[in-house]
Amino acid sequence: MKQGIHPDYQKVVFQDTSTGFKFLSGSTKGSNETIEWEDGNTYPLLKVEISSDSHPFYTGKQKLTDVGGRVDKFKKKYNMK
Image 1 (cartoon, rainbow, N blue to C red):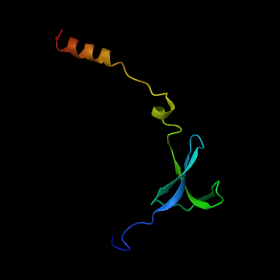
Image 2 (image 1 turned 180 degrees about the vertical axis):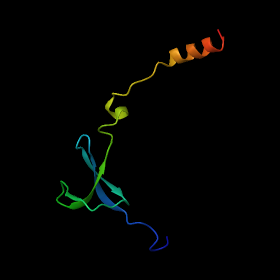
Image 3 (image 1 turned 45 degrees about the vertical axis):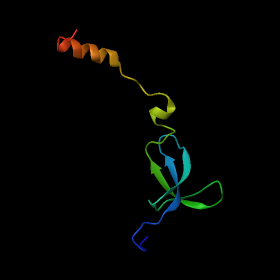
Image 4 (image 1 turned 135 degrees about the horizontal axis):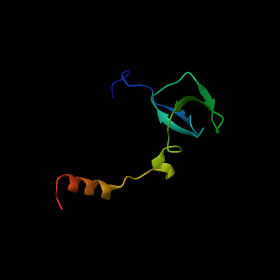
């Protein structure tokens, strides 16, 4: 691997701004804000708008569309009964 061309990979804390949920992960993204984590170390803080804690897919609040109704509309539109 060439030296000096890759960004620094470091541990950072991601915080979901809608729920306040925080988790520690690795990233090449840096930040001017820092936070003290549970292990006593200080890490850069990256704020995100959505995470697994607030995304509808992971929380079980995702709405499914009526697929059968859409198929029936298509068949009716093109006289395919």
